Image 1 (cartoon, protein in one colour):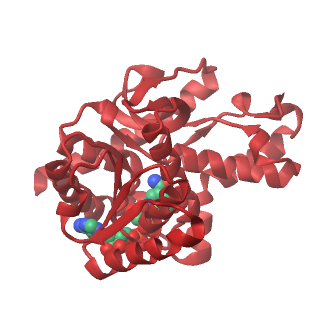
Image 2 (spheres, protein in one colour):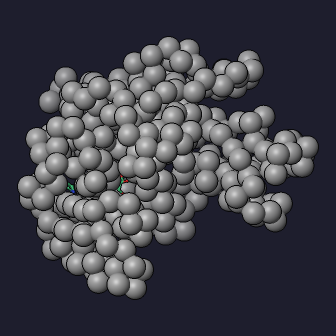
Length: 311
Ligand SMILES: NC(=O)c1ccc[n+]([C@@H]2O[C@H](COP(=O)([O-])OP(=O)(O)OC[C@H]3O[C@@H](n4cnc5c(N)ncnc54)[C@H](O)[C@@H]3O)[C@@H](O)[C@H]2O)c1
Ligand SMILES: O=C(O)C[C@H](O)C(=O)O
């Protein structure tokens, strides 16, 4: 199996490192317009292999020829936001970048499965889908795993239990309109709502929704360890055909009352990509939150379509 990671910046290099350390693919191609950075990070990773004990071969460069025949491709190319910006402020520049890299990826690897990470996530996944002409099962976005991981990390900090025993699900777009689901959150099989009172749980959910911005405020740029690990978890599920059920941005065709967009939903991930969208039985409040999130994604798709029409 072969993985391509486009964008050798903070997130891209972390995805490559996480997947290399899993030792689940024979080759990783790391591509960036900055050729030296791609080559240097690939070489640095190869030099880490004897310490970590992986046999994956990592090659870096700017020429898409090195990506030929990839089974899975992670797109992280694009600008990260700075303090004071929203993810949607990245739309114009990142849409240009994601469109062009998608075309280059598809030229070399017509059978690849694409995982988009670039922001604004749900709409960049839409851009990659439109540019690739791929079936929707082979295009998806990474955000729900990150948002759920943040929620689980904050619950661990609150309750002092292992993250391994915290199960959670979160739906919706990757932004302040995301929809964490306390009703579907358990800690060692106990409902979280029995362990944390409503007011405190609301604070944890608000922190989760603003989790990306919290890191941007601290560092002046956005997160990479948890996002990189999130994308690597999706690569692993596809490469191993493990049928994990994970929250990912997937193309909806009426599920949750939404259609013709990518938005965060639970999906079964395997060698076929998004093999199934899992439909949870939401209550009225959860359904309304999901609808509002879908409306926001639709607005940003509209802004993208306007930009395209003006170009
Ligand atoms: N989905 C998520 O949950 C999530 C999480 C974190 C970051 N992100 C997004 O991921 C993107 C990357 O973030 P980062 O922190 O790695 O940024 P970064 O600046 O560290 O890396 C981006 C890389 O993209 C490269 N690049 C730019 N244009 C390119 C092109 N046309 N072809 C190939 N490479 C190109 C740059 O040279 C740079 O190395 C941002 O858009 C960020 O908002 C998304
Ligand atoms: O917050 C950002 O801009 C990056 C990413 O979407 C995140 O949630 O960390």
